[in-house]
Amino acid sequence: MICGQGLMMLFSGFLLTKLGLRNTTLFGGWIMSAGMLLSYLTIQSSFYVLAITYGFMVGVGVGIAYTPPLVCSMKWLTNRKGLANGFVVAGFGGGSFIFNQVQTAYINPNNVAPNITLPKHPDEKYFDDPEVLDNAPNSFLILGAIYAVMQLIGVLLLFEPQEHRHDKIQGSLPSNERVPLIKNGDEDGHVDPSIETALDPKGSGLNLRPTEIVKTRAFWIIWSTFALNAQGPIFMTTLYKAFGQTFISDDTFLALVGAFGAIGNAGGRIFWGILADMFSYKTTMLFLCSTFTVFMLIIMTAPYGGKPMFFILIFIIFVIFSGNYSLFPTVTARAFGSAHVGVNYGLVFSSNIISGPIAVLLPIVLQDTIGWNGMFGLISGFSVISFILTLTFNVKRPTGENI
Image 1: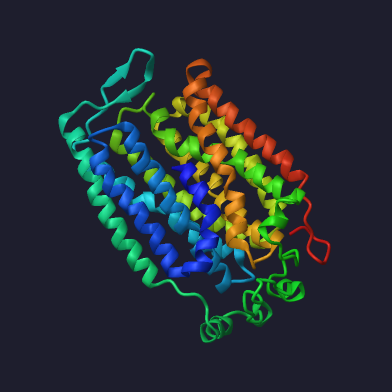
Image 2: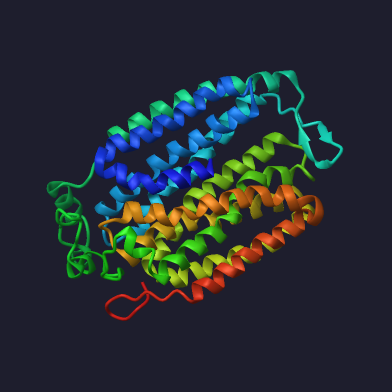
């Protein structure tokens, strides 16, 4: 799924220019929903075909639909890009608050505990209850249908700013925060840097094409930082429940932890977006990397604190790592300009094509050898490297301050 999303985000910006905002978003959303619906069949036939429908196909749909709302939101709130991105990606991160509960309530309504272990993996637990197993395939049909309807409603509410809408929003802002309305650029996509800087005082004043940003040192620092920081969110969102099962035998509680983690994930994206508007990207990212490192080490002690400590730590960790998804689209727009931000952010996100499989394979290869604490230490090490990389990031505003 991560590979599918990373690949298609490279092309989402191009599709946006060809198909338009609504068509691109709905096209991606319904590919994702189709992947869910088809998984009703593939989960009963072959794991490898399931990996295509529930994995790659869902990822392709998400990759297509992910970027257009971000680009749209930054057009509405040009000088509050962090806040705009934070709200959009908050919806993406917070959806599991609802659907964690829906899935668990439907698939495991009686809160049956997993009771099967494998000789080579005694810490992993599986279900063999017939009701739980029978409910799993039907859940794909229910979820796919719900997603498709929600996506249609969302797209019908999606608008790019036109002059009268822009003026209405501008009138609600303090006079010192109002900015002039300009088009995205001329027919070649160029924007006058002086106008771009006026629109976003925190921007660099540049407007670079994808072929230009890949030649900059700043791009590769951002790309590498994203690749390293992606290890934590992927590891924690996919394995927090497996770790919790090593000392907690309560499936409903673990689903509740995930649901509140999703609240932290959603709210955290808005919080980090606001911080990005208040401070520079560099300052905010250094704070994110340092706090994530600390809490990835603290979570090693969760078994000693039981359910309450596990709940609190997972919530905090989800709040922290959520900031990546607000900060990276924001810094992409500010460092390289808004004219090509859809494609440029797709290039930044392409780091997940490499980091995603690594994040999935590392626990498979290393966890039996180094255990949970070793994995937490390894993930925190990636965050330390990101901290060091961010120290070298040096893109300035025209005033000489960090973006």
